[in-house]
Image 1 (cartoon, one colour):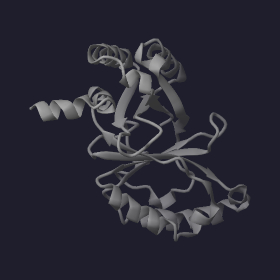
Image 2 (spheres, helix red, strand yellow):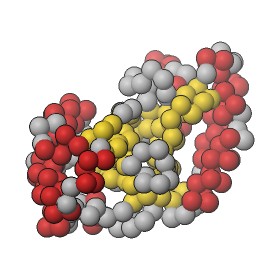
Image 3 (cartoon, helix red, strand yellow):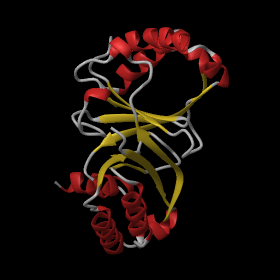
Image 4 (cartoon, one colour):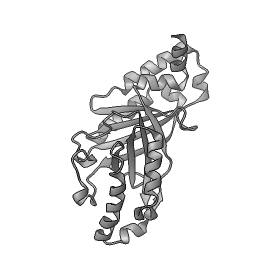
Length: 235
């Protein structure tokens, strides 16, 4: 229940895009090989078409921190990484919510044996979040009552799966929340409804927001330089 999540966001430079195609292909293959890790589960998402400052999101899941550090060190040694920046990255841990109570249910995030995305939806939405300090000044019973209203709204959207990870003391934010969603407009409606709950008044920050399209890492890399689109035209 205490697995670590690492969210790594990469942006590839214009210089890399100007390399010849054979060199880009070789670098992408090297990067994919480096991303294979026995102790780290890596889920790839393309940010092409949803962010102007980033291209690739890697959601990494591990039982311990050291495999994550080793994983990122391997990536740093690739040629593609020398043409990339990391404008955002987050570290968080899985933990049972102290406010669930009777809202815990079969199929909920705390009931899942395996941490990380299930992988049966086309998109994820991920963002860091921090609560206002006034939230923690409330009695636990009051916070539990307020969160009950928050959970009740979420239960109206059973097709959207939430993953809440905690970053207290190990990153700059307090949480990183991730949602597996069937359609981004469906998620928009959920968030609009959540804005009207009492809990929303206690949110300090919940940006930046990343909308990623789930796909194999090879495909996500091909989307960065348009190779996936060119292959589609060729066929």
